[in-house]
Image (tube, rainbow over all chains, first blue to last red; front, side, top):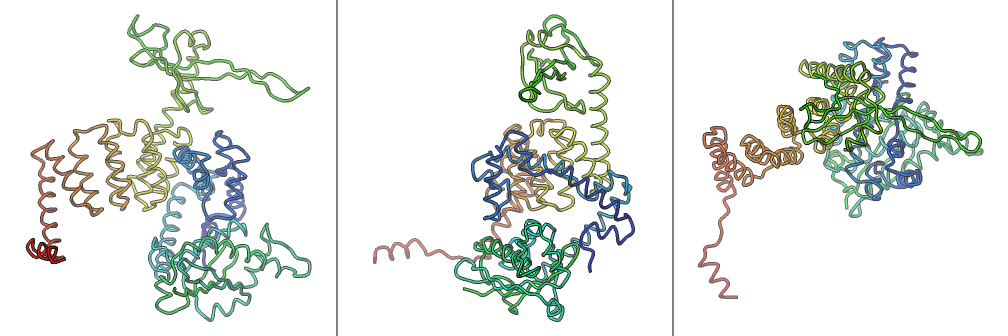
Length: 272
Length: 275
C-alpha cells in the first residue's frame, strides 16, 4: 500500500517508532480543540447553539464556522478570529513529534518538504483523472464529499490517490451502489468497492449499527448507506456530466485510501 | 528605558509604564463547598501621550494579551499595586523571547525552510495572537508554499489587525500584497491595497501595485485610472508610464482582435425610422 499519510511515511523511513507516533497522536488529541469548544469558552456560543449547529451539520456539508455565521449566532469577524486561534493552536503530527523531540528540526523540515512533494504529485495525478480543481465537476465533488464524510462517519481520514485499474477494482469483492441526483436533472451513479481490510475498518466505525442478524456486513452496509445519503445531499448542487473523464470515456475509476486500507470508486456521470 | 513612576506627563514628562497587580475574588463551588478564592491578576499599564491610562491583562506567559481598556488614574492608584519585579523579571524577558522566536521564524522563511518557519511563527502566535510581524510571517509562509486556504485565513486576520499598516511593518505589508497578487488572490490583494490607501492616500506605489492587481484581474480601465492617480502624485514615475503605454497598446490590440463593427449612425437611424 502506498504511504499516503505522514505517520506511515515516517515509520517506513525508520525516522520514528510506533510508540513515538502513538505519543504524538495523544499529544494532538489533547492539544487540538474543536471550534465549538473554543467558541463556548470565548463566550461566543452557548452549549445549545453548539448542539444546534452540530445537528445542522449532519444534514449539510457545511463546516461548523459557516453554519454558525449563517445561523446568525456569531459575526463573520468573530468567527474569523476564532478560526485563526484554532489554526494557530492546532498541532500537526510533525509538530507534535518535533515537540516531543522524536524528530530534530532538520529532520522535521526535510521530511515535510519531501512529504509535501509527494502530496503535490498525488494532486497532479488526481487532476489528470478528474480535471482541474475549482470547476465544480460532479465526480470531484463526490470525491471531496467522501473525503470529508469518512472522518465524520468512520472516524478515520480518507484520501483519493489516483487512477485505479479495472482488474484491481474486480479484486475488491464487496461493493455498494448508490446514485446522486444532480442539478438540472442529471444523475451520478457510483459504487464503492471494498476489500476485506477496508470492510473491517468500516465495520469498526464508532457509529456502525451492528445488526445481530446481519453481522459485520450489515454494519458496513449501514455505515456506507449513511455516507452515501450525506454525499447525496452535498452533490445536489453539482452540475451533471461536466467531468472531463466522464465525457471522454464514461466511468471514472479511482483509488481511495485510509491509513489501514484502500478502496475503489467507480463513478458514471449521466448528463441532462 | 523602563520607567515606573507615579508622576504624570504634566508634572514630570515621564509616563506611567509597567506591570500592576490587583486581587480578584471569585466564588467557586456550590452549597457546602462554596468558597471565595483570591487570585492575583497582573495587567500591563501604559500612559498614552494624551494622558490616558491604558491597561491590558498579562497572559500566563506574562505577555500583554486581550482587550485593552482605558481607566482613570485615580482608579489605577486605588485598585492596583505596582509590580516592577513582574515587569522586569517576567514580562520583558517574555517579550524578548517572543521577538527572538519571530526573528528565527523569519530567518527560516528566508532560507526556504517553510515548514520550520510555520512552526516558529505559530509558536510566537500562541503566545500573542495579535503579533503583527508573526501574522504577516505566517501568511507569507503559506503564500510561499502555495497554500491559499491558510493564506486566506491569515489575510482575514491581518485585515482586522490594528498596527498592520504601521510604518514599521510597511515592507511586510507590501510583500504580502504582492504575494497575494502573484498567488492569483486578486480580490484579497485589492482589499489589502485599498485598506492601505485609506490610511495613506498619497502613496503612489500603492496606486501602482493596485493597478497591477486590477490589470491581472482583467480590469484594464480601472488599472489605467489607478496609474493616473499614481502619476498625479509622482509625475516622474517611469514604471507607471511604461505600464500606461502597455495598457493602451493592449486595449488597441483587443479592439482590433475582436473586429467588431458597429452599424453606422445613418444605418441605425434608417432602421429605427423603418420600424
